Structure formats: C-alpha cells, structure tokens
Length: 339
Image 1: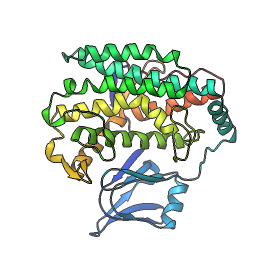
Image 2: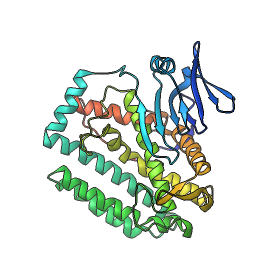
Image 3: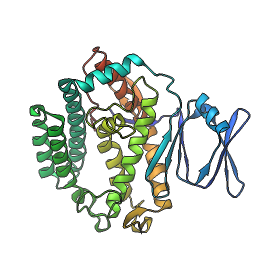
Image 4: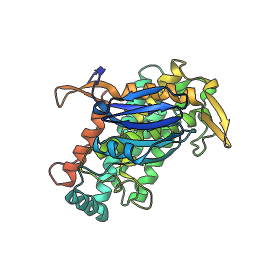
C-alpha cells in the first residue's frame, strides 16, 4: 500500500465555540453566542463532535436521527462525556447473538482478543521500524516488542493477554523520547485523568478521538459497540470501539503526535496546567483536531482492493472483517500497515 490523496466523502464537523445547534426546515445550522450562523450540510455529514457549551432541542435531535448523524460531546478539557447515538438503523439481533456467543465462550473470546493485540503490536513494530530506518535509536524497543508479541499465542486467558499487552506498550513508550527528541515533550511514564505532562496530554486526547471515530464507524455496521472482546463488557457504555482502536492508535494517533511535535506545530505554549495536571488549551486542540481529520481523510492504495481507501474507510473495513469472523465466514486478520 502507498499513500494517496484525500477522501472526499462524508465529513466530521467539529464545534469548539459556544452556541446553539438548530434545525430550520430541511437543514441544520450552528449559531454562536455572538449571532454568527454556520449551516451544516446534512447530506455530507457523518458526525458532529462538540467541545463548546452547546444547547439543542428535540427538534434538532429528531432531524439528526433521520439523517443518521451521530453527536459526540467532549468537555473543555477534551474529556469524552458521551454520545447521542441515533437508533440503530442496522440493528441486528443475529449479530448481537453472535457477539455474545463469542464473548461468553472463553476460547472464542480469547482468540479474537489475541488477534487485536497482535494487530496492534505489528503496527507498533511498523512505527518503530519507520523511525529506526531514519536513524532513531529504537532497535532495543523494537526487539522487545517483537519478542513479547511472539508470546501472545501462549496466553491462556484474557487477563494474561492484557498483561502482555501492557508490557508491549511499556516497551513501545520507552522509545518515545528517542523518536521525539524534544525536551518539552519528555515521556516519563503513562499518566491519565489528568495527564501530568504535555506528551501524555497529547496521547490521551488523540486516543479519545480514535475511540470516538471507531464508535462512529461501528454505528454504520451490524455490530453492537457494547460487546467487546479484549476490553471486558461491563458497566461501561462501550468496549468494542476500544478494541478496534488499539489496532489503529499506533499508526494514526502516535504517528500524528510525532509529526505535530517534529514540525513544531504543537509547542509548550499550547498546554496549560489545569485540574492537577497538564491539558492542551483550545488552540492546541484545534491544531490537533484539524490534522487528525486530515489524517482520517488521507487515502492509501489498498493492494487487496486495487484502489485507494481512506483511513476512516479502513476502520469500517476492519469492522466488516470482524462481522465475517463472527458469522464463521472468514477468520479475522487485523490490518497491519505496510509503510
């Protein structure tokens, strides 16, 4: 596969300002507190991600449901709050039964979970090879990741698998300082809610966007986002999106972070100390989000299909492959980057 152009299909709308989302006849628009109106082309929009203080009414939600537009809400700190998930227009009792069957059968669940971990690890290896070939001293981390990945098939439980996954990530993170080479973005350990340094703030924010994007793509399939396999199905709202996101985070989130820092697009002034931690400010989130959206719309040549597909489409294709696995049509093989 090779890098191509930009996917012109449905868009994601990001709202950072405060205001109101409204419906007028057969269109939607956002009106800021200052009275500025921006119309939303409903036929071209897949989801709306809201960061600002935004009000809306049932009339708006009814129209969004009819147009199958998903709304995701984050607070001013970039933390995910929740989603308006329109009625499941592809809802399938058969697929829910298949997901449940594979979750309750320990061997079937472990098999799928191992495939997710191996897929994520292979993409981590690709990221590390990319920087190794560019003179970064990441050979030791790459060797450790590869060695740990080879032990996945020996796991006897999902909990044991999660332990190996954690060790793989630890080895991977040990290479970040070599890759980044910037004293303002030093990795000293993973910290969340709140992140304790700018790099962790970037990782957490990027991961949140990845989880949201996968959730949006699940909505367009017959799968139920509440039933995952690597991440336990419990009282959290969704878990399948966390599973699938693991495969794409190294090549989408992490590569984007390295690029933004390497090109000096994100700098220390884009972060601020808040709620006992470090978070990106609004300008930083806008820069990151714009480049994230560009990355999702970027197309690559898919050798299996013989045509270009966007990264957003690749996520959907991953879900289709999982559906086929659950139905017994074809064993699931995770997407692994070739560049």
